Length: 363
Ligand code: NAD
Image (cartoon, protein in one colour):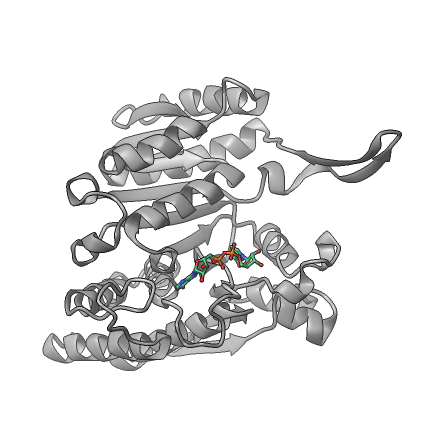
């Protein structure tokens, strides 16, 4: 049976980095003789123009019928003033809910060759290897009530952070399972000193932890975690947190590692999984062939590992990324001495490196 991948490039640099990720998938398919069918579907601002909605029904049903989804990014300044359901970003929440992808895995590893790209001192950041497990379908982004009301004192904006026990328990179990396979340390991040929803979060995580006695658990307030990630990033293994805290903390981790363009992600849950770089559509650099495609290409490695269970292929992609960086190639976000390669060149370098390694060690 061929592997069917729904490809949703989206807006801005989402489309540019997805093109490179697609090239890598085609290279792997060719090198390992896999039959892979990739089909593109509109999403975000692109879909608003062609279909009048950020997530056309055809796109959602194609994703639900695929073996995996490759996603670029959505968002475009021309739609910034649209009402919330008509913003390109509305597609993100609808897609996550439509696929039931409640767990977002964001691995963040400090590559030794990029140590000078981090704003932190080398002895502080060297060897950092963090997995952020972010809850993706609940919390502030999806809970009701929400909206803007008219009141006698003027308009009032409302959003709600709500989690039920089952939602907390299922994401906690995912995080504990990953922690068990890693360095067996889990940092659960909340705001339990101020929020009832966080008090419940902490209580449920503590209860679930009894089933994973080999995993050491710490509870951190989100503001303290933001500080500790800068002070002692190497001490973190798995970070478990809710939706908006995870959104913000993972951008901090990306900056600590050198660039947001490096970070991949996998969104897993009840059915088909979705793979996307952590970054957005970056309107400031779109169309200039400047975007770093490594986050998108790393997301393809996660796809091969988690959705297709093709670990050797995933390893080849990740090793190729590391070797290209080892040889000194940098996109502009990482370049320190003025020399850089374009988005497309970085994609080509990684594809060539995969081919070279496979030819050297044929299966
Ligand atoms: P952003 O991640 O798009 O960009 C932040 C900064 O990082 C920019 O300076 C950008 O140039 C840089 N950057 C991002 N990705 C890069 C890459 N691969 N290589 C090099 N530099 C990179 O965040 P933003 O500017 O806050 O948001 C822009 C748009 O993206 C908004 O419409 C936002 O809603 C949307 N967004 C979408 C997603 C998503 O689709 N998953 C995620 C975040 C933001």
